Length: 484
Image (cartoon, rainbow, N blue to C red; front, top):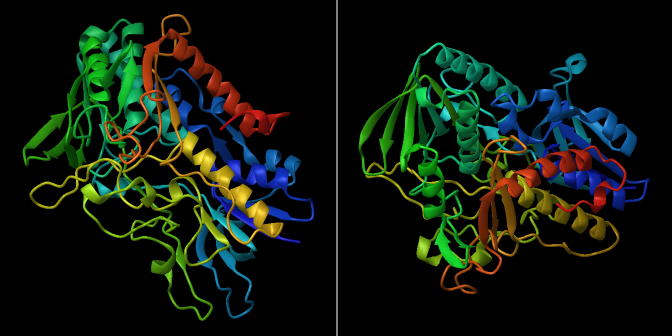
């Protein structure tokens, strides 16, 4: 009998655990550790954040789903790894701290044969003073954050209906942020809803981003096939914003957020004060800040984790200039180089370097997007790690399934208004996610599989994906046939 522990129940972790339970015999245990009692389909938090959906429409309790599937669920946070075992046993263990109300604060160790770290990100609001819920800006990173943001947005709409003019700022709250795509989707939905409420003429809306130019999205931009032409995503993005009357400020780092004001410095050193009445600014990410210990209790955290808190895997972490970055630097198996029974999936793995060119200002401050690893890539990585573990339990000597971001494509559907008759969505496919200039020397990607459109059909697809992926996550009949 084997025990496989999955840390995290987001897209990567939930996918990995679900397939492990499907593929492994009943005698093997699958244990999921997550501090949250509910699964959250995060892409739809955008709609919650403008009041189009309720929190209950994007979450569901995990315990009943896992109980029915035969998965052992522990509502707890992972505190430390003991990959060599400890004084009590040579079997590897993860130390957890319970977050469930009746056991809150209790600690225990779970022994494992294999472990997948899919803890996702720590939302590092502390990186920018004054950033985040309960302080001076809003977020849509969690369903609770999105509900709070929706309440504030409704209050702004009511003030505008009474004749007031208001300024909205949407974007990222630090120069090292990722997930610019979520900020993009939120701002176009916000603008759509202001028009739907008849108050768009009283709103000034600014997009604040660390991207060198619009359309970078942390993947160094993309050249998309559209209408028979190859168009840079910069043009695609700027055109969409111009059509909606949205202003933008690129190459920006937020140093501090105060009530109604963000202090910003740009890549060229310009200091600016950005005033607002409402700000939705996403935080930078860190790893879950787990520690790792040797069997003798010595601290081996730096053997397992990068300084960012993300787990080291089979990537090339050799520091090198941008001109020497290669697609093959990126991991394929997501296996720890230090411990063969340890994997990382989704946001939890440490990228070898950014995808976009790393840029710093004259003071050495990085103002450049970190690489995105959410959604479709996270699910595919989680599934591949699970498949490799299943094969290794059957006798394979090494991982058998790959999911390199330099070898996979991704599709993104970003809604721009949720009305089923007048809403639209920007639909973009990219192949590969990490550009490979050795295979595709002109653009780094295959133009036959990289394209984008905007229209009502994409919005219908977005609605379908919302329902389809929540169906899959609930492990309803036939869930495994729905692609990642």
